[in-house]
Image (cartoon, rainbow, N blue to C red):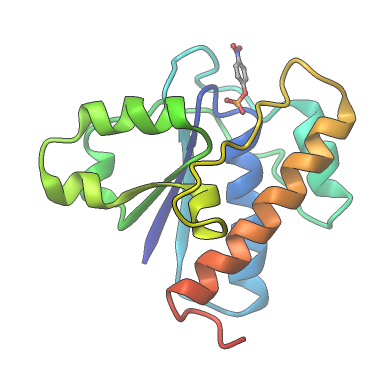
Length: 155
Ligand code: 4NP
């Protein structure tokens, strides 16, 4: 199983989602590969935002070594599940899909918790530290739902 987390810049929300999911994968000793990327090219090669790193550090997860990269169409072939943080990311990725099979892999991440409600994970980039804690809580919940939904962790 390969899971890709997607946001706009790949320095706040999606690397946090990657780190959270990786720590759950490790905890439950699962065979899941997790990666993240952005739809935009602004932050290619950069480490996650310092506030994102600090937030994950509070939860014993180190994401300081991650590097920003941009989504490519090849990711549809590489990954089984592609989770976007918001509706804009979703629309951008769907616009690149070549087939219905590509489209089926893509879902807004909070729809795993609140099915069909199309709730976005707010972008914490322009706000304060509290925004990052809020992002953490939403993504932690979503990652638990993903693992349960796919029968990867027995509740
Ligand atoms: P992210 O947040 O999509 O959660 O990584 C952003 C980071 C940077 C920018 C936008 C969103 N930016 O415009 O530089």
